Length: 141
Image 1 (tube, rainbow, N blue to C red):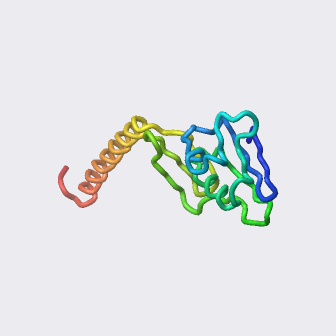
Image 2 (spheres, one colour):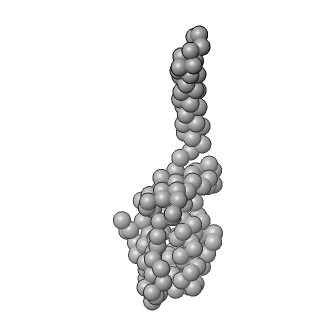
Image 3 (spheres, one colour):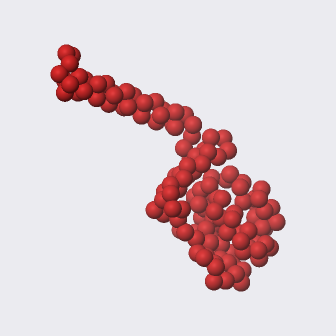
């Protein structure tokens, strides 16, 4: 749920600070639109064309920036397929194909541990398949 909302005549921008991982993607892309540490409003959606705001919202790794178009343009949609993107410092963004479900951050050590566990499971299944294959083929164990 957005805790900040900014509006121009063409777009409404929602910002959810609890989801933000401070990757600075928005600020680096459009520093005159996203002004950190500003007194008062820090998002200025009227400073650029609507499509620029849409592009920034789609590039937000945490999903903290979302939008609703007021100009009749297409609304925000979930991607057709699931996406995984490696971000700065090894953070990973995971977007499901059924909705904008985003895991805020998976660090590389956790990913490495998961990968090791998955490899062990695959090896165990491969051994079981070889054993079952030997039995079903009538070969000695």
